[in-house]
Length: 512
Image (cartoon, rainbow, N blue to C red; front, side):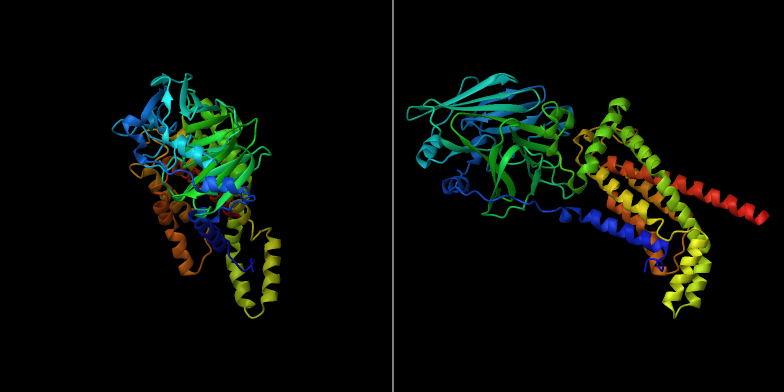
């Protein structure tokens, strides 16, 4: 079967399948294997019946304290919840100089919402507002919130650091072990796209990870995970997370308004660690490298993680993410050169043998076994491998998808310039120069690449692939398109190099 298939046909199949897989990637992400649901009836009732929050809780009269740092401003309501978290960094500002708010104005669930198993205590807890020891404070200062529930003083101490990490300590004056849940809130919903995973990530103390994409958990169904040390709820670039790297906890997850949300199961006086902010490796690693698991790379995490680490290493020496991408692409091409060289040589040999192959096919048209035998003898005689061009393609596919995930998920590229007109590698090329250049280099490579396709339909498919890729990449981040442009340029140069070698060989043979 494969021997009868021309090299170009295999390339068409590989490219088309890759493109289909690329476009439908999210549909192929494996669904997580989840653990048993919550067995405790009162616990299930509590989570199912968490109090609905009044969206007016963001009105100014309900905000009792604001925390400021060099990177954010957070507002705390009289319910003890974080109801606003606005980023201040210049790269997160909009055109009208407004910061990105990572907490939705109309959220149904805010960070630090608490709900108690004891319904009577829970009702009273929701009716009595918190009071604050300060109305305005800076990072690393303690905000002390208190409320009196029939003689039981509930205290919630919140302390943010400069980057958005925070610690929450909950205390009851009677020291009773009241059962309750506390949540990091709904995930940020800043970046709405279909290319990256949005939802929940649960990381356990045995280094296993479970992902719940929005919609994985059906309405009315809840899942529970034990021995959790990180539970994060994220969009493409931002996350709201709880973590306790020393003391594993239990988390219950459910679908709320089509978003995956989670609650930590808690008891009595306890301390919780949280983070709201960008999924930036440098920030997350400043606390613990395991927190970088909130960045979702999908199937190719095992390649993507070291790929980003190497890209970051290059950036640390070059100082420009765009040039770091260029250098990374060049290094990858150099590493893969022996394979791509063999692939191109194989295609050249198959081009030379094409007339003889066609002759064999016509001669033994009615005898497939003899046709196969004579074709194999021909390939063996000239040391040509009909499958020689497939292996490099198969190897490059996971590498490409890993880079695709890295460059799509890297918030480090946000507002990062490359050169000339590219001022932000995380958004599309404003003048479409990179996508057009990418298509042009693909087209030029087609012209100089040996082709043995006789079928006009297949020839048309090949001819229009550059246009398909231009359309497909037109709205992709400039950083990703830059990688593809450099990759195409190297392929073009390599093909010219191989063509010249074979042209010289043919010239020598003719002169003999």
